[in-house]
Length: 199
Image (tube, rainbow, N blue to C red; front, side, top):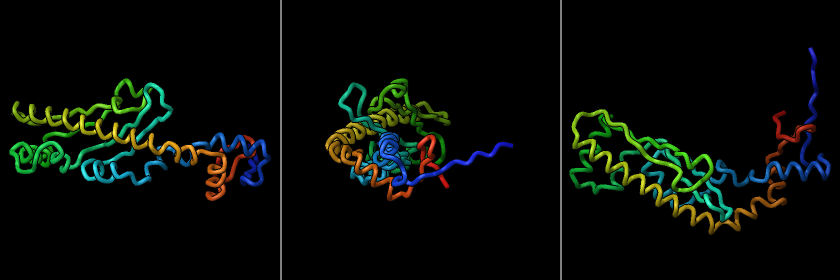
């Protein structure tokens, strides 16, 4: 058996050359999708979370073709029906009954554009219907299409907000900001690979 000892170094123990490499490797540590989603954007808190099982968002902001933002969900809540049909309408009441009876579900799917791009047009909503009445399926189909447009509109709005925050993002990805975060986290780095390692 061969046992290899790996030396872990704190940021301050790295050479200047290693520090530069570590900073570049972790350039987006403050702005990755995971961390950035904790920013309390009103559009997410007010227009998304009450109606959907929210799964974060993806973004790319380099002013290039295919850039933008994509809000992601993994399911809808009953309240999502209120976004499309007023609570007093027969359509609202019927959809809620069908939803609560488990006769249909809404699926969120990334489409072929998502292979290369991140924007509002890289996802689609589809439905699965388990009932027997054609009228009900027609209503569900229409509801799904309108809900998809709602999410795409909100993704476009979020893109605009993110571009407005672009300067903040640049600051968070600066050398000084990345270094500060690595130190606060007390991260340790593999001396050979310079990857963050757990002791």
